[in-house]
Amino acid sequence: MSTTLAPNASALTDEQSAFVEAIRDFCDREVGTREQRDTLTNNGRHPHNMELYRRVAELGWLGISIGEEYGGTGGTMVDLMLFLEETSRGMLPIGGFGVSMISAGAVEKFGTEELKQEILGGVVNGNVESIAMSEPGAGSDVGALQCKAEKVDGGYIVNGQKTWISEAQFASHILLVCRTTPGGRKHEGLTMLSVPVPSEGMEIRGIETMGGEVVNDVFFTDVFVPDARLVGAQDQAWMQLMTGLNLERLILAGLLLGTAQRAFDDVLSYIKEREQFGRPIGSFQALKHRVADLATEIECCRLLTYDVARKVDANPGALFPREASMAKLKVTETAKRVALEGMQMMGGYGYATEYDMEGHVRQTLVSTIYGGTSEIQRDIIGKTYGL
Image (cartoon, rainbow, N blue to C red):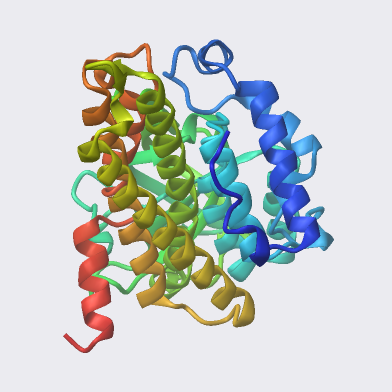
């Protein structure tokens, strides 16, 4: 059980407090034991379970921040952060939710009404949505992408490869960022298309990673995408992306905040019970001070994350590039530190697959890479200061 009520009891409404408790009860009941989690995830290989995901959808939780006109509950960004933090802390295997919300955010801002009904309504009902930006030669430098969509009568013909595409194997659609107009500046001529899965000419191949089966290569060979699946305006995807990346970074901050808290809870429980030299190892000053530092850092992350969420709620049209990047940077780096120090405090048991800590380490290490590396976040923050 978590040692805190996120973000803190006094900051939540009665409804939000009840929401947090409901999520915790569900996680404790459904995935509260290692045996339950292993059964649902093939021993940690698959961090998304579609059957459980659809059950969460039936509770109405997947539409927490989606408008009521699309079947959601129209909640706030703070409500979304609560859901992300608590499901991540509870280790609920719904890894497709974060990327679904990122994809849905772009459609909500720029899609036609028909696409909104299809995509947003689908997320509410348990569909997974994916987004494809990275390519073998375009990672942090998104503007260097080369996947091409040629305009033809009635739509587009797509050719190229995308890589590191999260949960594409479960997706109903892939929000594809591709190049429609070559030449000119590299950030010009980019377009968003919503591509149904499966589509003729599309191939999805899983990439084996130390985190399990999460990401994929996606190949497009003469894939036809109708005009009706254009998201926003042709050749204007770069500016559309800039508005969405800040949402993505805040979503990732919420998720990794929950992971940091879970890693902390796990190591705290261990050092209270593990005895050496005749007493619990947590009573030794070296570990006690470590725990104090980690708890303080997590609380700083929590305050930052929810502060940014409240700013977004107060001014939904603003981008908040500095604040969103700060949240993503601070939370992911802190989560990595908590997991690594948790492993150190647990000794050999922290490295053993019998315990969850080694999984926390794998999950947090990659979090400082996806969604914009820590180096990219620092660069963005620096630019907001005119550097």
